[in-house]
Image (cartoon, rainbow, N blue to C red):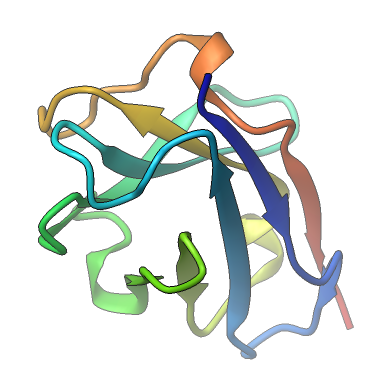
Length: 124
């Protein structure tokens, strides 16, 4: 069974770059139909799909984040990373990594396919 675990700083200052890593176990990130996805949930708001990197290394992004987001991977470590630049307090959220099994833009997989989530607060 594929498991995912987020890691990264819990506090980021405004205008800085948020960087989160997701470590995947139980399956290779280069396996077919691995769409490694980042999702977030700001306080009091719904889920927001940020983007994904697929098994071939191709990426897709939510247009709302595209100009300042970047998803990459390290196949040797079976990890993928989210970088979100120029953060503001509105980027405060619980960030989740997840594994989807299709490449539909905006698709949020079932909860069982997510990591446990990590709280990121943007504050000076």
